[in-house]
Image (cartoon, rainbow, N blue to C red; front, side, top):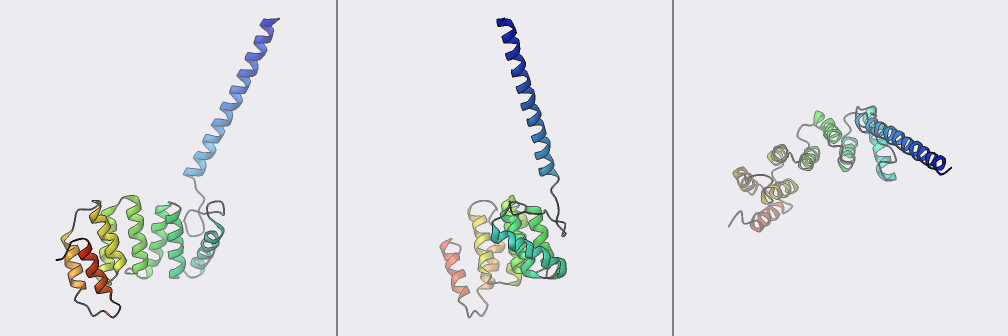
Length: 195
């Protein structure tokens, strides 16, 4: 009799383990499908759902997608999508979204800034540096670009580039009604880049 009881217990354990293995296999393939086959929205970007975002960001996401379907040149919609995708860690989608705006204005500072930040997030510092310099070339007193570029030089992500000092000194020659020159001068002093 004890042998029959032990066989029953072994059978129950075997069935339980088999069911658990089956569940794990199903979950593995379901997750693999979710990760490697994301659904795309009408713009060819990863579709986001209200599970991915808070309510406010999800509404901004939906509105931006709808706007870009109708008016692909709408800057605010493209930038919103870029910011949301970056926040979600969907960097390729973020680059595409910022690229929507850059198709219409290849020197748009906000889109270039978004792109530079995505590159920094990805550890692509040379590409980020290139985007920052595009901004500085067109907008010589764009302080955010200087600040973020300087952080990359100071933390060792990029080797210090003499072009930075050249651009900064060049920018200090412009007429400035908003005191950006003073801010730039202070920034350069703070990092001991000018006497």
